Length: 475
Ligand code: 6PG
Image (cartoon, rainbow, N blue to C red; front, top):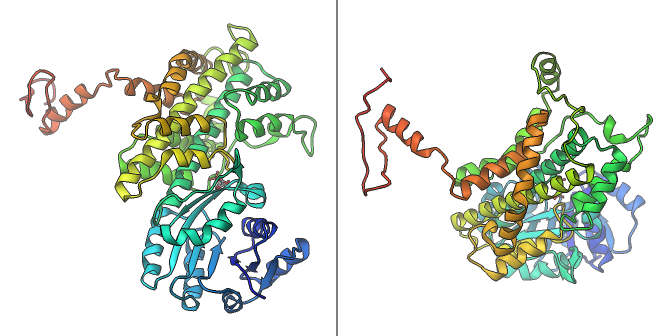
């Protein structure tokens, strides 16, 4: 049987994308390394447009040129292993897509290697988890722009739609798509951490019950914070436990996993010299959360503030307090996105990608984990000013920051006095204060550097580079 595209790897994400394509009328060849997986998919999800193949040779034979394949395998070595098997079977002009969460440098390397043979390699970010993949993910394709036209009809058909437009757009050459997905995940980490901190504040400083939390987050989901993550959070607080009385959320261990894309974003930002402190803070928060034993032991010996966890009475009414948290969260969220887009902007220059930030925000509007109303405003900001250097400086966001930053400061002080860790929100405030030109103490650091290492310093009142013979106190 002839097919339009081959999917290699039929685990949850591969299977869901294959069925999504099949739903949209494409003939999809499905292949998995182990025959059992293919058979299970065919048995449990039969579809007239999904055709099983048991060898890569047959899968390749089932298509006309230029042939199109999408790998949905685990990032890292499995991708190289599939490429090694598939490459000898491919011809010039064929297209190979990697739809996993691959590291963008790997994608750049693979793109270059396959280009030698005239094969177009695509690194495509796919966001939205299983449901997204099945019914409409956000898709971030990177690769050869000409060749993109061949796969665009399939990818755009299966993508989520926001106001009728597909949440899929060409990002740029080689690693651009996977880079954008990596930063998407970094922002996802920051977003989730901010929501977790808001939860801690409401629960421990505000005394909110799960029912009240569910109501509050549902309310937030009707306003400017409306987003997938706020929506699922509201639902989570209502979810009954499977084993015990009460809500499931209270029976989950306080230790979060991570597969690495947030960490990549943070590492990459240091390489680029861009401050994504909130993403880094979110990674560190997960790292701290994993130290369960140490945290349990330290709890017995390190004193907290006098106002003990859970007993602090908020100085204001619950509703007023919740409004402060909501406004503070919103201000911090703006900073997180400003940091993420700043990283994209530097990467675009560094790697010569010519990323379109308005378009990136537009394809994040639906399908992906960070989908939110808010992204319309980001698109508007970049469309209004394509040279916008920092999202915070856009009129709309500036206004929001100026309106909401007092709330951010007041919930931060409440959190700190109550002993509630708020690493991401703290970073938002620190970033804002440094960015808005408050002294950051670098004059003193320069003095120290010059003092111990003759690293020189510059002056506020005259041109040039100076070194001072520092006389005191350091023998
Ligand atoms: C997405 C998600 C997806 C996945 C993350 C979770 O956009 O659909 O980001 O890629 O859920 O990998 O990442 P962690 O396991 O690192 O939290």
